[in-house]
Length: 278
Ligand code: NAD
Image 1 (cartoon, rainbow, N blue to C red):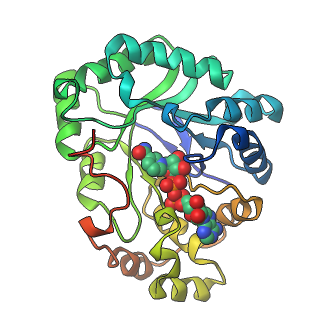
Image 2 (tube, rainbow, N blue to C red; image 1 turned 90 degrees about the vertical axis):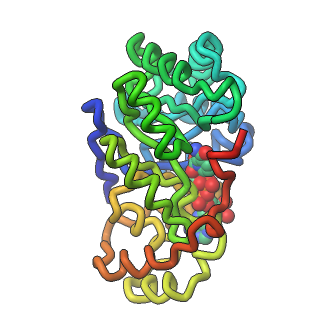
């Protein structure tokens, strides 16, 4: 089994598959990340907001893995958009994670009506952090097409990734297309629909039966076959292993299309709408 890497627009590479740790309590994060590393995961997606960077860092420290073999992402908290606060926040994150540098630092939400709508100066702060070597790459999360256009217009620098909600019931195609137009990679958050309806969908179940795979594995394969980066979350070791076991099959074009056809548009969204979320 292997997790292939994707080359980002800044020349660095990222494992296409990883572990997400949203809603994993700090006290449990060390055990969950340690289990995932044992299974073979080499990419961890955390955030300042998740409150578990210390647990993640403890597992990394005890893993004995070479730093270059691990890919670690964290994200700027919504109350740290101010330029100075953003910079200071990454230093605090690095301290908690026990790292000298993260691989990827993201603006978690654009917050288009807070801070006078000024996420451009926040983006500039992230570019400065990249230049100072505290993060290898910088990107954004939950950016809509007009948010992407604005930061690129003002700074001339596209994000390496845009991490957005994507799963068959909410395929988010317009945002995926805008992200690709800027040469950024799509990171598909909640690829299992947060454990919701897709896992019980008849179309998903039928494809899963065809390959002797589980619905969760089919949802992950769908995202991978479309070129998106994914990091499903589970705290259970057997599910961590199940979710990782997706590298021995591929969906046909028709199957990818059949799953894309499940898109419900806006009603399929699980999380907040970035245009109105503050
Ligand atoms: P997910 O789609 O990964 O679903 C996780 C849930 O699915 C689990 O809690 C469990 O209930 C279920 N599950 C997991 N494996 C399963 C299996 N094999 N079989 C059946 N059920 C299974 O949800 P998520 O955690 O929301 O998303 C993944 C990651 O994406 C997060 O942990 C986080 O890192 C990231 N994320 C980012 C944002 C953002 O705003 N940038 C928002 C949400 C999530």
